[in-house]
Length: 231
Image (cartoon, rainbow, N blue to C red; front, side, top):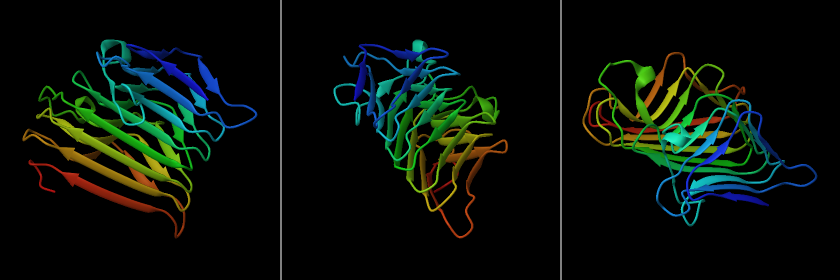
């Protein structure tokens, strides 16, 4: 196993990689270890490949349940992902929150797992009221064409919570893709807790896709709560 722990941020810079080779490698990235703030950033061109091991990103004493906290050093998100995360049959667990931006931002790259993928993000920041979906903040935000989360046979559980008010959303899929290519299951649960313009529980914008591509296979499940638009 490999554990990287930091009092503040963990940043994997362009070209950086973590790879399991002969046997599965369990990988843990634990920022915010002292509880004073610290997020996780994977730059474009980075990769984590666990070769079937579990991948966990979070913060505090227990990163599997504790939260990475967004700072300027982590792109204002609790976790900022522009690289590739590949787990094979391993599980992927991400816990994050931010008062500066998205709880978690998937801005590029591929996340692939046939295990259980658990993504839990919270934002406490609202938008500027410009009514431009690309500028909204979300507990969990997938953005940009080419950004993809995919599973063939796993279960993907995405939970986003937003309390920032105006243009603050639980889960946003903006031009990106979340998919099951086989018998896998996708669960998206989003809550916008505060009344405010465009406070969606779940927003799928700008050609974003949540889909099953397998004939007769796969399951899509959605649960959204918003005081603006109802449940």
